[in-house]
Amino acid sequence: MSLEKQFSDDFKGSDATVQSDHERQASVGKITRISSIMMVLVSGLALFSDGYNAQIIGYMNPLFKELYPDTFSAEFKTRLSNSYLIGEIFGMLGFGFLIDRLGRRTGVFWATLLLILGVILATAAHGTSTSGMFWMMIVGRGIAGVGAGGEYPTCGTGSAEASDETPYVRKRRGMLVAVATDFSIDLGFVVAGIIALIVLAAYHENVSVGVWRVCFGLGFVLPAGLLFFRLRIINSTQYRKHVIKRKIPYLLVIKRYWKPMLGTSLAWFFYDFVTYPFGIFSSTIISQLNPSDSLVQNIGYGTVVNCFYLPGCIVGGFLMDKIGRKQTMTLGFFLWSVLGFIIAGALNPIQSVFPLFVVLYGIFNALGEMGPGVATFLCGAESFPTPLRGHFLGLAAAVGKAGAAIGTEVFTPIQDSFGDAQAGIRAVFFIGAAFALIGGIVAWTLIPDRERDLESEDARFRAYLIENGYEGDFGESLESELKTTQFSL
Image (cartoon, rainbow, N blue to C red):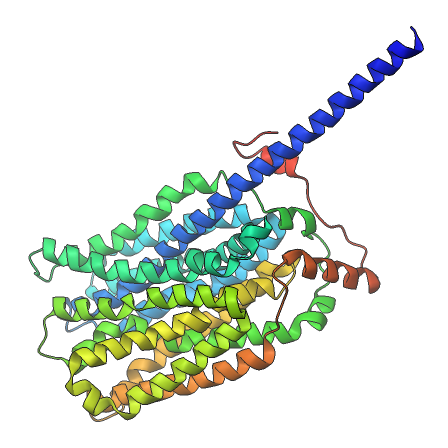
């Protein structure tokens, strides 16, 4: 063989290899883009479903009171709300750990299965007595809560990492994550009220067992439909590059991240302590100030109040991309507090013009979403490195749901401890405003400002571990993951 021919053959082989590498990179890029889009869309739909299942109980409380007046006590009312919240706490902690070890995709699949199981049990609740039926409902909603809680770290980390794939999307991560997380949850809140009104209309506004069973059962439809799509998602590029599956150096991690861990957890606690009871019991508050209204009217007013969540989320997403995450959270907390004090202090004249009270109540809810509502997810995701993002986001969300459980637990007793409904409502607005003020101080002093690029903190974290003698492994291969999806290289 001549030297020229050998050189020509070698060149062709090299050219084929380069072309093959380019094709492989293009294929990986296409798979990643498709999976990222699916992750954001599915995260939004999943959290919409969680919002629906969390809020529907609030709209059913007045119906339970009419259907089962001798059984549906304040204790059962609180337990039905808190069973879901307590289940969420366990789901957030457990799945936060799971998704950092086994991957985001594994977490979202099992979270969806648990949510479906819990909704089925709550919908089919029966018992030898009405009390037994309520206890089965409580257990079912608790299991659903575990699945819904698992969605928070999986969807929060997944949407944040998916929106880090390109610089163009990264600049708009605030709005993207706001829509995929908090906006979707709040939309579920609103749709729950609309569904309740539609089902009541279908029953000709008659109070019936079928109303609550249909409303609960519809919470099964969307999670069941999402299972197929969740099997087609792959883990993010950041996760594949930086995952630590064994020998996580927790002491080094806590030493470096204790301050943002404390800040994100406390901020989420104060946010949920205020927003959950004011959202779940909106129909109850409306009925107390307007006792002559019908069940449909009270649910309708409660739905109108919760509609204000949505523009709050959009404004918050815009502000996060413009002025920063920490700044948006702090601003929202302080404005939330100011309006809460105004409503509490001037409740008598405001309540005399009832539509004015409804509008101010709605703006109060919107301010909570504009600041901490949208920023808690993103601060919880961006403040920590990819290998531990699920741990910390799950912990912060769990502390937040503990605040929600405590808030809903004490909300009704605080109201009932006063002589009349108006005094009780004034008291809870005062307390809510005070907690929002503390939340603003926590957000400003404890939550860090981070770069928009997740890779920067991941690189600093890896360097920190190496400097301190850590010898573990980072990353996982794409090929092994693709074997369990429909994708191929």
